[in-house]
Image (cartoon, rainbow, N blue to C red; front, side, top):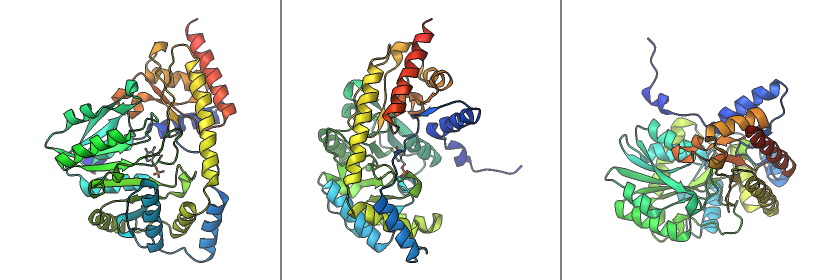
Length: 390
Ligand SMILES: Cc1ncc(COP(=O)(O)O)c(C=O)c1O
């Protein structure tokens, strides 16, 4: 019989894409669905960035780029990452790939051996545990606690470290909770990583979508650069999910391995999108400020609306564009709530368990949708919950 690799069976899909497929099928059948499941800004890419890409295409920047990125692109990434994190990286530390996801995947490929234990936030972005298993390693969940504003306790983390631990994965601001680690958390996490000689993979894709706080990277702690992969990209900040461009800074030796991995996996990131990236990072930023202000307005609408629903309570996150309400008071499980919301209220959202076992009792809404749609969704869910009691 024809064979498949054992490792491929370890990869899991992503809840958002599964629910999207179901919602699209319902739409084809004529049902109206409000999409609060997908982590994608609904704004257009700022015009100056699209213009830069068009200009680059017309200027003939349509050939292979060096695998780790154009020299001027790596320069721009190092400068941007250094400026926004208060760190001093140079171009040799910077790598550009088609999205933050390939950077997560490739850095894990470079750093993880079978049997290693990888600390992953739970509830957390599913790719971390999926890729860990794919590499024959073991994801070790660290619980994000609602009573701790969806941060994990450093004391919990400490208890999970064994001689097999190889890496700690951080994601702050976090998907799905919107929680953010504090500077004190980061210092304590770094001390643990340093003591046990661990890598830190810091997924900072929501670094610019913060409200009442200032974004902080673990890389800014003296010494932390030597064991940190700090990943960011254009998808969320600049509303550019479909452009596929991410970047990261890391120790030079790892960047060299990533360069070689890129040569073998996909040759290079598109050349003209890298030119657009340079404009995004160095051009005017006022569009981003407007998007963040709009996200904040929507966050307040959805948090207030959810807290007004019977059996639902919701923290007011200070980052990303997700809320993670506690739905235990409704008597429904997370899966039941998400299924009913889609079937009865026409609202697509994700069960908290799509992000790991500690997501039970919660659902995730993305508020990357209009205030009008958010209000209709809240109304429909309110009706759904009161119908349940009849
Ligand atoms: C935490 C996190 N990391 C990475 C990604 C993927 O980013 P990209 O589109 O740059 O691959 C997402 C997208 O939802 C995310 O939420």
